[in-house]
Image 1: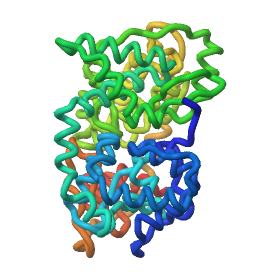
Image 2: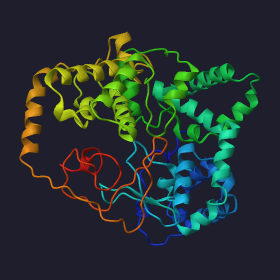
Image 3: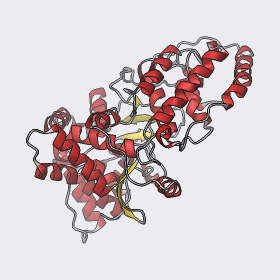
Length: 434
């Protein structure tokens, strides 16, 4: 498969600037070039004649989306289907507010789900009446079918292996998935597995063929060239082996993956984050952010410790407690599979180890500066007015979505964000403000 424009990585077409102004699916499709439309058709399970003119292809895709919603929704990633379900349950043209994820959903990028990122403090999503009428009757059936058929389970396992390795040659990727299949199925149907992989939207979006070879990568990987170059520089060959359970854990919860949380270092990290005040979605997000930053940690990496600095009880930590927390973060970072190391750990290889020693000298100055800034401000408590459009989603560990507000008042960093998300201000709207 040749390297193709990947909707999972593209920013939205400038034509798709969002507003509440009514736009039809036909208009949205017409905003893409022909190559992008052909890719979209492939992703959504529709065959395309390469000789078809763009205008005809737009008409064909418009008719396909309207006439066969169950078919094209079955070709979406689980994350996209569940996003669509939440928007359907909210209702047409009802704005919802999502947390910013590491990578966008296909539905947002294509414009099937409307979104607006014009304000860096808000990420708005909604569906039009037209899309609602098309998908509402079938969305729950599609999810039940994906669960029953094993499609979503296969997707989670594939995501897990990709999150553990970062990037895998396609041949090796197929081997590890086959090994998982043989371990978990009493009567393996290899033809069925091959068909499911061939139709997998994950494989279609994140498989490439270029100067590095034929490979599949995690959607969380931002710089493919950097990982390949560092592997060559560090002479990393071969890949670590992982169990099916490890892959399943690493691929669950898209897009907020957490890896290695059942290991001793992972459990210590979770317990420490709970002690410093994290709970619910904030806890999951802190674990996810720590895992992602740990992939890029070599020596000193301040961002690795940012979730700790943002924790509710950070100002109350004494020097010894703070350093103990930093050590736990560093030990976790050194214990998890690294993409550059082909799934091996910094602890096992001695490479890319985290250095937290700088905090021994910097910590007092950092805390004194933060305390001085906090003492100089007089933060009034503020009550969020009733939303004028929608209440948003309830915070839920099984949800990718957070309710976010309609205004950003002057709020103390550790006070609840007035948008009603349940997050503290410094971890919600306040994190985008200086």
